[in-house]
Amino acid sequence: GAVVSQHPSRVICKSGTSVKIECRSLDFQATTMFWYRQFPKQSLMLMATSNEGSKATYEQGVEKDKFLINHASLTLSTLTVTSAHPEDSSFYICSARGPDRGFGYTFGSGTRLTVV
Amino acid sequence: DAKTTQPNSMESNEEEPVHLPCNHSTISGTDYIHWYRQLPSQGPEYVIHGLTSNVNNRMASLAIAEDRKSSTLILHRATLRDAAVYYCILDSNYQLIWGAGTKLIIKP
Image (cartoon, rainbow over all chains, first blue to last red; front, top):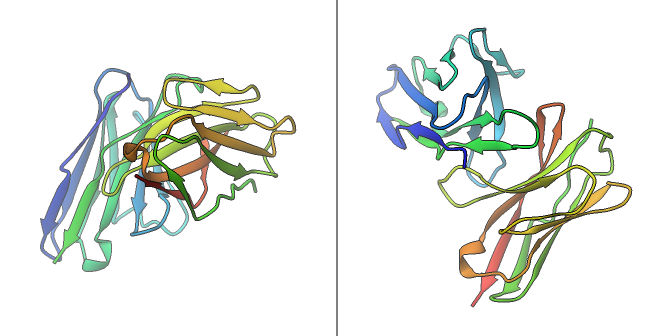
């Protein structure tokens, strides 16, 4: 089945530094990838949708200059949290869409970001 | 806007069937119904999805009401490994609309 690999699984960084999270589709081409954020005991919140070769579309309230998304190839999308602050600490999850609606969506294993 | 409503939690005994309900009364005609489940500190795992007809796979069955305003995820024989948060999601033209999820507790 479709696999999405997300790295790192957890990261601790100092306040003010930047962190990059990678999301790779291993056995299929993902023209569209999604980035989510999840707070404890809550559902996933969509942050942005990235399409290969074009700018990401950000949800309302998500700072595009803070959460930089790059989708340079059909198998790789990256999320960079710039100038991280403790309030950015969260669980970040990527997802890739299958080739058509019959395939559903495949999620990465998530990245636990802790900013100290 | 379409949305989904799920019970906050449900309990079931091990090796018994589990029926997880979801209401989506504002669903549109082309919206797919997806179910995913999530363990703590992991990404969601695909369970099943469908459009109009009932669906079966090795993990579960999806029963969709005739008017499509509700659906039920059926786990035929729950095991302890099925304990998770189950999300009912509408795929509305590739826009995913998430429910709050049902925490399924399996009692041995």
